Length: 403
Image (cartoon, rainbow, N blue to C red; front, side, top):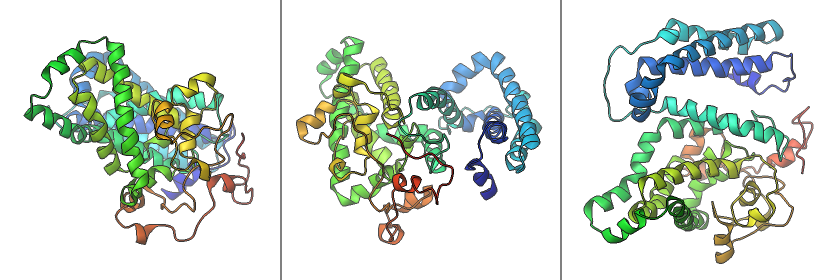
């Protein structure tokens, strides 16, 4: 495994070196193997909403697509073996593709049909990875703020955070909605108001939800910066030293549950219509990815109305002036009102993270960090990635940060 990660992190990535074919091969073969396992155990590994709707209606093209994915993975694995001296990526690709084929490949069928109410979202993980990656990776390459690789520093940690949040999406959603649904089930609160709210124009409802949830999460977010016990959880999110479309996934699971529980209260209790709720959830999902992304486009006057990457990057900035600023997710005006707005004209942070980088690396260390902070934090301050990237002795042949 160490050799595999070493190859994925290799600096020898030029076209014709075999790295691109090997990396793409591992991704496609992993996706193919996951799809085959989902075919074999759909009741455990696929979301019920997709299982009994989308998949059954579209198997006529999903199975041929899976066959094509595995075929391309084989070809990429062979290409890597032919081009690259280190064969780790190629053999791994072929091993994953062969395993998928032996399990049934595109013809795999479930051995039994168990209609369970709770399942993991392995399919949801790959669908999100494909859709968000296809959207944001090209945007970050074309409009990049920082010249960093796709598999940049600490990409494995953030991919694991992304994986866990999508794999357990049903479980996390259930826990997050429990407070709001419990209140609704045991009260008849403001039934007239709820009906009036639900009858509004759909666009107006979504705009109202954006403002109310942003106001709620602003104070929730601010508390996690203000109180040491809560900060220990939130520090995990701020430990990211590189910003891109996957960086926003780095959040401690306890904070995820508490944040979603708190911010969903207003939109569920006030009575917004279901289409407005789903519309907002989709919007905030894209927005949270967007504001963490490595996109350096200037949005001019719009930056003062809607949160953009430059606005939120300052929240993660290492500059002392930026600490405890820019809590809003949607509307910078909320920070303006409560005195936490910081947005220097035409400037970006010089780096990201926490001074001294006290949060340890790797997922499980970060999971335990809030509970055993004194024993697990890095006692010796380390340079920020912004400084380390400009040290050619530590990162040879690596582009420096640009502005």
